Length: 123
Image 1 (spheres, helix red, strand yellow):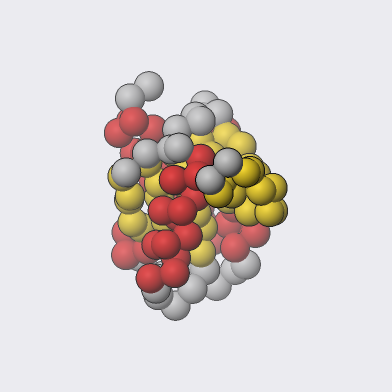
Image 2 (cartoon, helix red, strand yellow):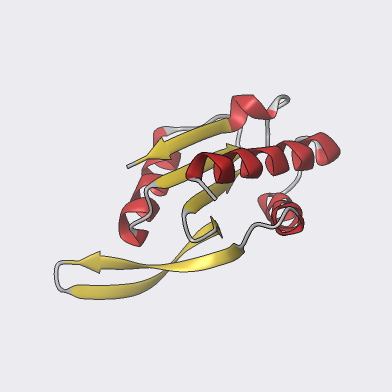
């Protein structure tokens, strides 16, 4: 499956979850429902995937985790915030760098219209 097809499928699943649940829940609830929806659509999904920090010649298993990894290609970082701020972008870009993934989606479910809570990143 091509990367744009994967991200379209992910966004469709996220819209379905948001349409059914609306804003106002905990991030963990959206994560479980989104994973369920994506798996039902045939995507390969990993939750809370560890991301080691690599510094020069050492690898630190510091407990950082990608919320969701789809098809071993797309990182999804979920939020339930009033608005994105620069630290959210820095977080997903760092996860992308350390995991060597080139595509990331930052999804905020705490919005009235999900398209206003979506950002796509490419390295």
